[in-house]
Amino acid sequence: MKSYILSIVTWLPTVGAIILLALFKKNQARAIKKFATAWFGLAFVASLLLLTYNRAVGGMQFLEDCQWIPVIGARYQMGVDGVTILLIVLTTLLGAIASLSSWNYIQKREKEYYALLLFLQTAVVGVFASMDLFLFYLFFEVSLVPMYFLIGIWGGENRL
Image 1 (spheres, rainbow, N blue to C red):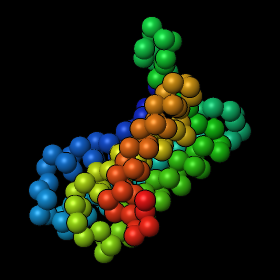
Image 2 (cartoon, rainbow, N blue to C red; image 1 turned 60 degrees about the vertical axis):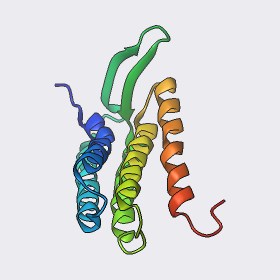
Image 3 (cartoon, one colour; image 1 turned 90 degrees about the vertical axis):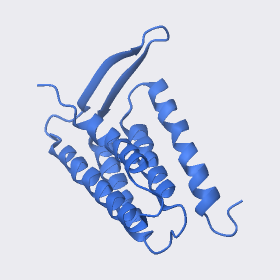
Image 4 (cartoon, rainbow, N blue to C red; image 1 turned 120 degrees about the vertical axis):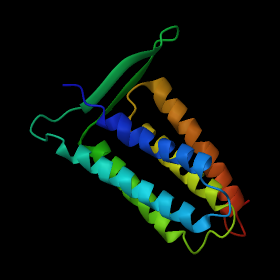
C-alpha cells in the first residue's frame, strides 16, 4: 500500500498558507491568528503519524518516488529514517509554538507573517524529507525566501 503521509505533512502548511492568503482580509487579525495556529496544530498532528515508523525494520520508510524532471534526472523522492522523523515532528511542533507565541508580538501585516511562517515550515520539512539532491537544494533555497522577509519585516531592531 502506497503511503502519502510524508507529502501530506510536507505540503499541508502550504495549503494552509494559500487558504489564508485567499480567504482572509487584512483586518481580520484575530481570525488569521486562530486559523494559522489551528493549521500549525493540524500539521503537527499529521506529523505524529510518522511516529508509526517501524524501528525493527529500520532504514528509510514512508518512501515516495516519482519522476519529476526527466531531462536532468530529478525525482520527487522523499523518505525518512529514525532521525529525520524526530526532526520533522520537532519542526511541526516548533511551528505551532512559534505561531502561538507570536500572537501578542505580531501587530502588523499578520496575514503575510503567518503565510510566510507556513511556507517556511513546508520548506524546512521538505529539506529533512527529501532524498533527491535537486529536491533538497530546491527546498533549502526556497526556505531562504520566507526567512528573509520574516527577519526583514518583523525582526528586531538590529536585524540588518
